[in-house]
Image 1 (cartoon, rainbow, N blue to C red):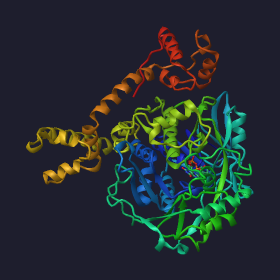
Image 2: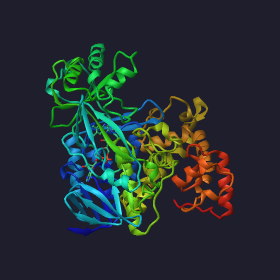
Image 3: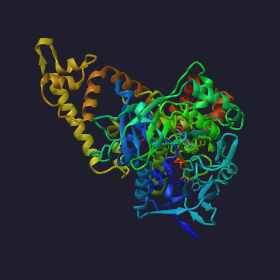
Length: 609
Ligand SMILES: Cc1cc2nc3c(=O)[nH]c(=O)nc-3n(C[C@H](O)[C@H](O)[C@H](O)COP(=O)(O)OP(=O)(O)OC[C@H]3O[C@@H](n4cnc5c(N)ncnc54)[C@H](O)[C@@H]3O)c2cc1C
């Protein structure tokens, strides 16, 4: 069998789903090849979407016309706005999801597209001729041809799972690893490394004593992920909180001689911000307790996910460990915890479009880029799908700026600096976070989503309506004086501790504004000074971003640059002087030299949108 497509997406995880949907929605003849059709959109680890820095990505995916936010809304069983007591820049949405429903939604969403073919098989090889992508060869002996291939194999490339000193091949529990692809990529000249992650055991909720645990309900007032979701229809469920204790830590310490992490069996670097419980106990010996969140796996299952105790210790140690925890004394483990090592490709092989520098038409997205997390994967997948289809359409690629989107920061960090450990998004990675917030993702990106033909027609109208209503209310607040305070309502709102809701209460009338409108209005008024300063910084910096470095620029011919800088830049091939300035070791003096050279070459060109 040999068939031709415009775009082939390899892997039906979070990156693959967004890539395949974006490419096919933009009219590219698209094929998704994945190991197991029924696992399309499956959540390998925790049953939740969003979180600090990740909620922002989900809202951006939505504004650009991706699917993750809608899938999360359709399967959410608890919503929480994290950091709600902090400033708006730090606020991030998170939802517990029904794992089965999320999986079902994504599968159906892809299956419903008549212009998207789905084929169950294992891709073994990317076919390349004269430095350009030609298609893929599968383990089943099929060849599919396409000038663009998006690789999203997740944790499956040479995946090895560890439980105690036992280890076995697999991409995640119950699914085969992908073998051969990693070696094929190495032979094409890609630097392949290995990373590690892990997951906790799944617990039988019927054997948990919830009566002694702290109950954590979701938000009363739910803000859905998608800007277009009207309301949440599923019943909402609580989580429960418990803690490890000295006995738990003793059991863990005793089991370390059979830990693959502490006996040197696992050598790859794991997720710094999501360490295993044995890592927490060893690295923070002064802490006598760690929090454990018991999260429901869904509406029609009794299974719980104990967030905070991922481990690769042997099953007998896992059992003693969980049973030492309050409320879990008689708990039954349904599925054991495990660690997994997998291969990834150094993301500095990628342009900011996510196309590789080594093979034309080959894109990579998701865990293969060295990231961890469903949201990071989905954002990367969406951008890879957009840019693969842009090539098909003969359009300019879309590269989001750091000042424009979390997605822009994510990609710029990866392709400019690379990563030695699984990269996770955080609000602290984003320089302009007072401007680039979760609540205004639609204002920032719906125009781009609409221009790409991905966001719905009414998305822009909604943004415009929001702007108009906020501006109108700002004018009104500035005009209404409060004689007792000798100040306008706008001046009152500027004061710390006073919210727009307080003003509305004072005026004794409903605000009439939506959640998003209220946030925009408060930010505009309260942070006017910060915003102006950030905009000025962006303007200053964007001058560097606008200075494009031509694709074949010869660094060897630039006098005054050290050999180290020449080599680094020749390898990384930054698109702009701004990107070059973020490469480690590239000095301001080197940037000045380059600027002079580029100007002399007439290399100054304006970048589009
Ligand atoms: C044990 C475990 C623990 C984790 N813990 C965390 C955590 O604590 N925090 C966190 O944020 N994230 C965690 N993750 C990671 C999270 O699951 C991933 O970041 C996310 O799923 C990556 O999405 P992806 O689309 O890149 O890949 P995946 O969701 O892994 O999907 C990959 C897809 O590609 C398919 N595939 C692979 N190879 C081939 C091939 N050769 N041919 C065809 N199809 C192929 C697979 O069948 C699968 O459908 C964990 C994952 C695992 C397995």
